[in-house]
Each structure stands twice: as C-alpha cells, then as structure tokens.
Length: 443
Image (tube, rainbow, N blue to C red; front, side):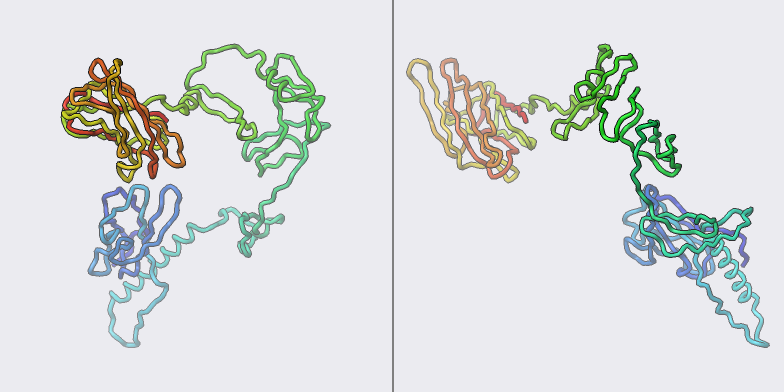
C-alpha cells in the first residue's frame, strides 16, 4: 500500500436524513484508529462520539483492513444528524511501532511497507495539529518565548512590554474624568480611539456621561447649571437646564407631520424611573387588545346541548347570545360553566322569572346551573352576561334578559365560584328544536 493522500479528517454537514458518512480517502487499520466529533454550526461547540450501538454512538461499516469506508451515525439510525450540525471523522494512530524484525529472519515486504505507511500517517496527523497551532510568521527573526505560564481567569494573552515572551493579563476597568476646562468630543464607537487625551485608548470602547449634543458649553463634573444648550441648531439657547427646558428646546421648531405605523416613538416610562423607551406606532397599537372576540355560532335545531370551549385565559366577560331558541319540553334553559377539569353542575345560586306584563308569569331557582325560565311553546331571544367578579376565587356573576314568544320577558341572575380559571360554557335543558347560539368574550 502507498500513502498518496494528505487528508487526515473528513467533515460532512448533516441534512436531517443521512446516517452514513464516508471518510474516504482516509485509510485505517482498525476501528480504534478513528475519532468522531459532532459540531454545532452556530456555536462551534464540539461533542466527542464513541463507537457503539446506541443513539449517541457511531458504528464502522468495514470488516477488512487496511481500508477506507464509512461510519453510521447514529448507530441505531433513529434520529439522523440535523443540518445545524456537522460530523468530523479523523484518523488518529497510536504513537508507537510494534514491528520487531529478527536477525536473519524472513523478509516480508508488506510488513515493512505497512510500518512505513503508518509513520507517514503519523507525520500527517502531527502536521494537522501543527497547522492549527499558534505560529509566528516565516519572516520573524526575534526570539520570543512561546511559554505562557498559568492562565489568568477572564484574562487575555499578549506579548510582554519587551516583546520577548507571551503573558496572561487581566482586563482592567478604570474611571476617568472629562476635562471641564477643555471639553473634548469623545468617540463612543466600539474599538475606536477617543480624541481627548484623558480618553484616547485604542483598545477600549468609551462610555461617557457628557457628549457633544448640538452645543453644550463647558460643564462641571456632575451638573449642567449655568451652561447653554442649542439642541436644534436654531440659535435659541437655554441656561440653568432642567427637564422642562430640555423638553421645550427639543420640541421647538419641529413641524407637524403624518405619523405612519412604522414610525418610531420615544416614550418615558413612569413605572421605570422615567427611562426612555422606543417602539413603533404599530408596536404600541398591538399592545391594545381587541375589544370583543366573537365565537363560532352553533345551531340549536336539534340535540340536547351546545358547548363553547377553548375560552382563553384572562377572559373577564362572556356574552351568550340566543336567537329563536326553543325546547320540546317545558324545562328551563340551563347554562353551566367549567374549567379545564370539566363543567361544574353544583354550587350555583341562580333564579329566573318570566312576565307577560299583565300580572301573569312564573319563576324558578337552580343550584345546578344558571337557569333561564322557559316553556315548551316559548321561543327565546336575548342574552346572558357572565362577568368575572373575583379572580382569586374564580367567582362569576350572571345576568340575563330576553323575550319569549311575543308577550313574555325573561330575566334573572346568579353567581358561581369555580375551582380554577374558566375555559368553557355549555347550554342545555332538554331537546332543542329551533334557533342558534353564539358567544363573545373580552379580556
């Protein structure tokens, strides 16, 4: 065998489906000659993978050696490598030579050639490591020592002041005072050098309290008292600067324009020490919830109940709307409410009455639901409103009003506490034979 390729590793990107990864043209003599690493593309984080049969192992698709071939990863082939990762297969030979040639023994060219091949492969293996190490340019003629000493926590590596050795240095932070006598414009761009002598450091980004805003006169270290400000360049300056004067000066001279939804707005947050915050007009509008969300209408021409589920968390008012709803029997319409654990059919305090305006009518009470007085010949149209009274105890108050036939008015109310936040409402009472029902909810 000969060694004609200088490759020592092969890296392949995952695609969410492939589980076989070739490491050709790398030749190995045993599975132990391979090291396998997966890498997260976004972060560069590497994970070593061992040979085996499980979901976190690789297996070799070779039975004879020396040869090149492929590995299977993962070995169980259940969850293929995603496109967010790469897999690297690298040949790493043990740094040893175990061939022993005896004096006047037999001559076997393949034995010697195999050892020659392994030595070249080890050279390539070492060269790959050298090429990834810190090196000086070819033209460098100095005698700097590459020995760095013990690392400094959160430090950085640099050449010493004499340029003769590498050393670890801690990152330092120091305060500096701006000059009041000779104001300087200081660059705050990352990595840029400041103009002023007290701030000129090429390896620092600067954060300063005072900067050049239009024209600010020389100021003391911590106040702007008796200094001038011309923020809009109009020549209208102010002194003894306070918050109201700054606001007035910044607003003066601004013309009225039409604001678009994509425009930025800067606001002061009274709940956050008055700190300024910026958002788009649309972003602010998105903070305002829709007033009413309408559900999906359900028919009551048949069946014995209709249920409206998936009522969102935070709902504080629900309106149930009835249009021409009737039952085949003289039983009340019943409205039950419930949480994620189901509808609750006890603990209600409810009553309902009907009146024809001429002294006739009837009334009923219920502890199993919010009841609505109803007769077999009645056709009810109206609404029931459920309002959250106590969020801690999930207490809801109900009231209803509507018409039955053309001569009766139905009205009533009640209250009920749930065991958790309301998520569903159901209407029943008997067999429906006409009409429809819908709900709306508000937070």
